[in-house]
Length: 238
Image (tube, rainbow, N blue to C red; front, side):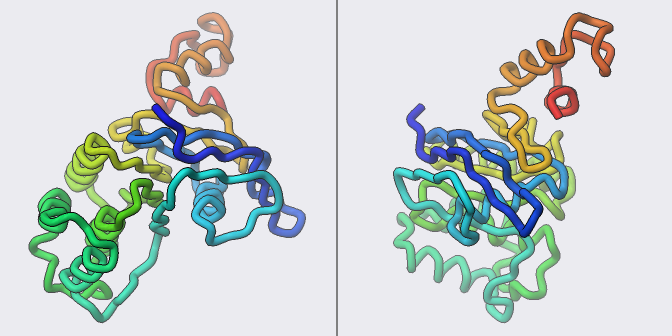
């Protein structure tokens, strides 16, 4: 697949603290890429640098098309109903006819359309703002913690909706700290820990890299030379 974003040696300092240390990876057209890491690993800082919200100190971000960055923990237009926000976004970006209804159905937003955004629960607001991101004309959407505040059923439903949009050609980059959620949704993964990339690839590629890192069975800290889950690979590589 063609590369739509290339991040090279991205570095960001907050005073003496190096939040990002020569971060490099690629985003490919039509994939769901999961940026995986614990709280404090640098995920939000990285997204803000890629999205143009935050200046970085060194390195580069090269994109072949505009992107849409959806931050975590925001509540735009709090006095407006969800319906207004979706109609405004669809009109402003010239969304294709019928896309609004597709997005509403995919994210189960029909019961929320007349509720004010400022009155929504955290999980409800997440779904509404994901809809806003998907109604833009941007083919690349960065979403910071899109599953935060969702229960298991909602997470699975939203994940299935995102998969369907990726199949239709959208490129999604998701910052996720819950590794199980990422494993169900994403095609490839970037593992971030302490502001440093620890691995990039598919689940098979990461587990192979982690297995090689820990050595023959019984020699590694995890006690096995074969790793089969994203969680095990992350622990071995970080």
